[in-house]
Length: 298
Image 1: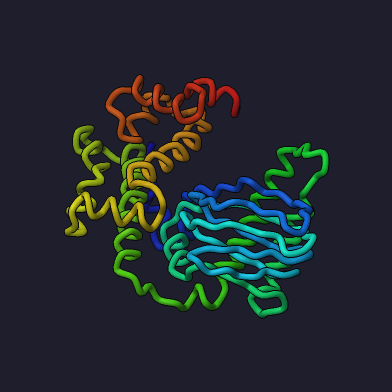
Image 2 (image 1 turned 90 degrees about the vertical axis):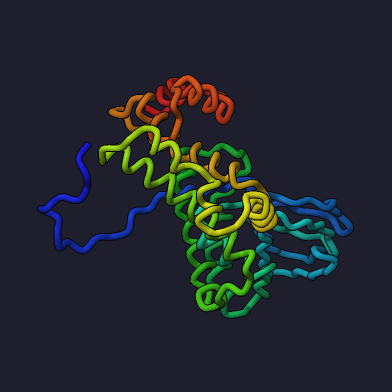
């Protein structure tokens, strides 16, 4: 495949390329009785609480926050928390992630986000969440069209959340956040560049594989691998190599849906010297071989 840098396009005004993976899971609405309690837990994703009616207490970091009708709370990943209902309550809840370190780091930097009912930042978020609730089906029989709609509505919620003034204008104030963000950025952009260079430029396989080294990212940041890994886990809740694996899974799924690309090319683009190793890893990740996944998504 030829490079996108064609002379015919020189001078054109372009939009940025997007290569994000947005995940949504655990979405549900539930009616609970007064005194209902959910024990302490944590997740490797953001969690949203929206109190439709009633009141609950959410306890995190030894602080208890009361949420009442119309209130919204967003917890960042890896936060231990427990929930107790103070009255008969209806709540809406879901988990989400977006694998762009600019979004994740900025949101984590805010701490626990609480948007009280009626506040300026709450109003646009409620509109977005109510549209998500409209997709709920008591029979839980959802079509592909419903899933597409969920994707659009979740993107709308994320956009409204990130467009909040507090998120747009609060600078990073933690050196550890900056380090973790830089590691995530290095991993994501290196993988993207490797894939782009494989399909658009001449490359040397040995050099291509070495550029996936996380240790090189640590070296560029002038930090030790042990410190880099420790900081990354503290901020994001998982190891840098787990983050790289998540990105590879998302990229492999995307590339396998392009019928003109061979599994061998995809495995090499992702940094695997042996296609059989890639196939084993992909099956471990998804419980399907690359060929089975491709066939089911044709």
